[in-house]
Length: 502
Image 1 (cartoon, rainbow, N blue to C red):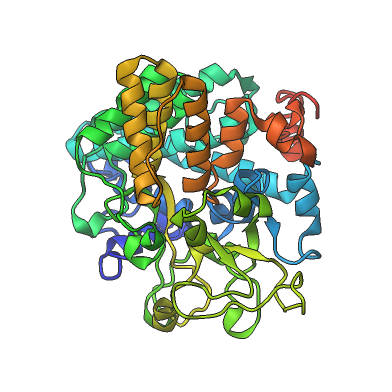
Image 2: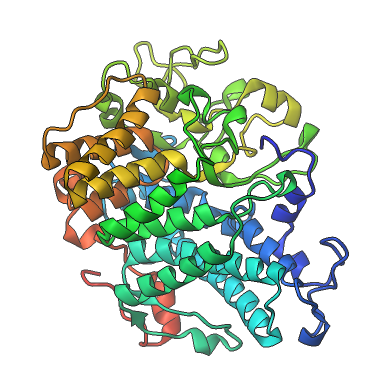
């Protein structure tokens, strides 16, 4: 919420989509979006683009797909660093489905995830069709078009790594039957992602005025495209994009990792893109996100901080090197001091004697600050921004790509990038022995640095390590991709075919 308290942009991010399509005259007195195409002036796409920012954070169903429990399940529970959390009885089926890899085709979690990603794609396609119909080429509209293409790529990247082959819908849908499409090959989806992000890189600005904090930049597009390339082992392409970001000098690691996920760490120089959330004093202007609420400590009274989902595992707790400051900045321990604000967390049911909390560990990256609780009048941290792309991830991607490319120069680059991460973590510099051993170092650093941020499961799959790491929990090759929701299969009437194994 930092840096967004007093600017109009926070309002724009949160405007419900209903407002965008019912003609209320907002957005700096632009014409209502129910106007005809001929009524729209150049730059008039901006209202629709604001709706895209709101859709990924919106406090309704859409927000669940991009940061709520369905997102946490698909991006988090399946990894070895987190599990369902909450109480044993609360959503017990989720633990079986995701922690134990007993996937269910018609569970509302994957249906919501699928549907809302395609809703965002549809909104982006509508904006792009309007721009094309009007022949908009002015500077403001080109930025808007780039934002729409980024969001379409962002959605498809989630879909392709979660489901594999998915329908490619890159056009405005007027008739629902037009969306009954067969799956497109993974390579074709990635080609669309690349094209959209290349356009976004060319047309998004490097920076925005302070009142637009949270809007997309060309660095965000470069970082997302670098990640998409990493998934296809396009090492040279990923490294080049990461180095372009690094060479600008615009971003840097926040010196104190323990403050990165507090209020002062939001929209810092380490942030490349965050999903913005905001709650004003005493609950006014409540544009909250489910992200912090869904993961907050599940307790009572002053410890009723959320629903308690997506909690760290013992495996993650045991994995860190001694002295790694990221460990206690990532994991909040039941029955211990919080290490930040002088509060002692109640004990857990696993303690002797047993305490009231259902889990031993909690995600400290969404732990609410007392001052913010007082200011907002909320115990649960709905104001916490969701960090989507940060500079540390860029350094880690660059290190991985450089190591895989090999050669003395690239080895030196990889070592430099990793040691920047380790130095910030309070650890001694790593040494380069050989490519294979350094690959292990990189994998470990990604785990420690990005723990609880939704990257780990997908990393294990793309590295080919999922069978080894997750096999004991029930993972097999069939679990690389989640089954397509049965509702989508039924709607398509035989056009859309289910994923193998399901």
